[in-house]
Image (tube, rainbow, N blue to C red; front, side, top):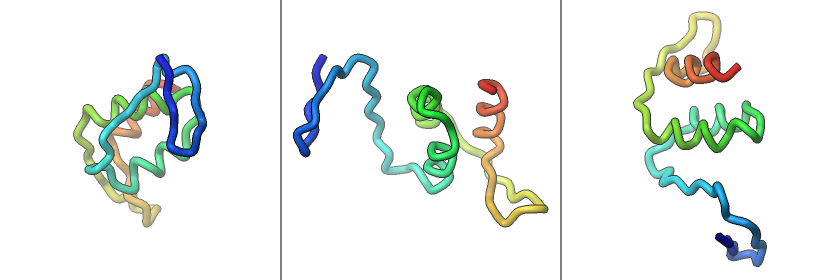
Length: 76
């Protein structure tokens, strides 16, 4: 398979993952930025297929998704 982007870039599309992100919130992007490149495709696919449970940690003002934390601990 081949992919071609609007800016003219192209390449091998094997393993390319395209997900509808209309319902994704900032916590998705925070986790995506946090992890290494090789984990991102499986995380994106997993994220799209799961519900998320938010809880504010007492020592932090940042909401943390307990579901994502479990996923990260399983792959670490």
